[in-house]
Image (cartoon, rainbow, N blue to C red; front, side, top):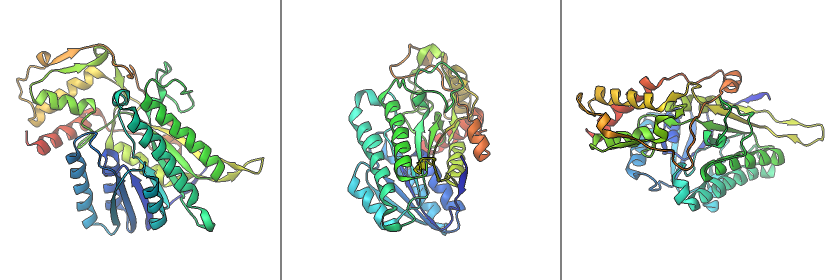
Length: 362
């Protein structure tokens, strides 16, 4: 499918889930690079993890906004609030929407299913409905909806690397099921209402000021306090870790290229819809990843040079909802947008360790 090129300058861009991890990095870059327009951040600032980290990221956004010709507006609220979403669309009329707001986490979904239904299903439905009605009364409306899916949709697939052509009908967590549902809902709205939409399956995003529930971050917290980390599946896991700067670069490129609208043989729209993987395509063994993390924590001064790592780690079995391997086939992203993530774990974990040292004053 061809792409309609979108110049992001002087547009109204709505980014939900900012100042979340990916959202904050995306908005900060937009503020630094665009020459005009408005960027709206929408987030409910919930306490799934320490809200102080979101406040910190919001501070970075506000600092970038002071030096930017782009107007920035932060709105505190949930995409699960339909009246709020409708008001935002009515007042600002965004032409590009990036939906990153979601309840994240595989394991959290086992004990807290309600929040996944509210945010990932009802919230995404509210975004789709707002996009649909953005065309009312002959308006130009939303030119491109970009939304975060997840590598979790691949579930227990045995074939690697994971391709967007693979069947993904066997989710192993509620979180994964909600993300697959997002893709199905987006496809139906693209077909029915000709809404250009692109889903992005993120593969294990990490980096400075990331999510504290992610392994690299929680392991650092535990080790810095002298605790013992648990390495699941006895270390027999591989992950396609993707540094946040690579994710943001991929999202930016996709934002600028919307699936083209076209009529089908039946006279109805061919859905302007696409899904891509964003992953490095180089899965790392979990034990190697941990070893690199330890080395970079020592280098940054978070841990002492004589830290006894063997005494502070435990190999345990697999957790419910987890999978042994994630491995992205990002050939389609390279083909259509000329981009493949390239930042390796050494560089990425070094940036995280240095940030952690500074942020927590270790």
